[in-house]
Length: 114
Length: 120
Image (cartoon, rainbow over all chains, first blue to last red; front, side, top):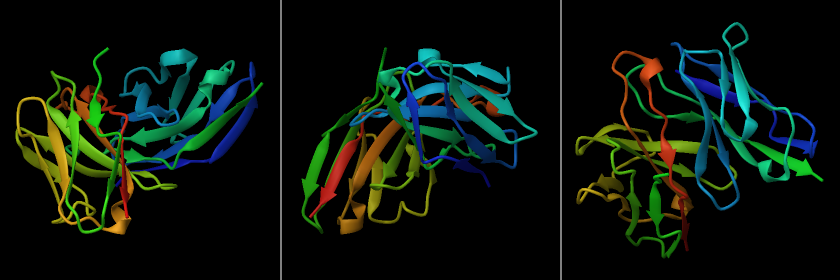
């Protein structure tokens, strides 16, 4: 079985400072991992995905994430936060091979202060 | 960029009534999904659908739920007799294909904006 733990339910940063959203996963197989973002009253938008190619994955809007198998982590980072980054972020892991149900973390709400 | 569309954006229904949530997946996608998010809780998988049949469902997806692809474009979720605890945001998603050779070929699921279902 697989699971995802997002270590912070709420993160607050100042505009222009770095963002770090932490995610640890558990999976029986080599996982595929995703980060999705949800802005208020909007759907879930894919930020980036890791599917066993490069361990450093670049996504949209300047976000990137690094897959570290030894630490079972997939933390999301951005060098400089923008006001428009304020949203809920979900770390997501694919199921064991053959299944399709995504397993979501509980989410991290990112607040960006001016 | 193509997107998944869901209607209505908000549905208010009396307890015990039937409700149908509608989705139009991305046109070349083959796999379709429903998820729900109860307020303050995680996004939870309900069901996946491929080749006109359910390929996987969760424990949540009991006999009061059903899915259908009535034509070439729509994908619906029906709740037969709604309960208060069915109040949630329901998300539809679709994906292009699933790799038979392992996770490297998995395609991400693309989500709609959701339907907020309120049961009174």
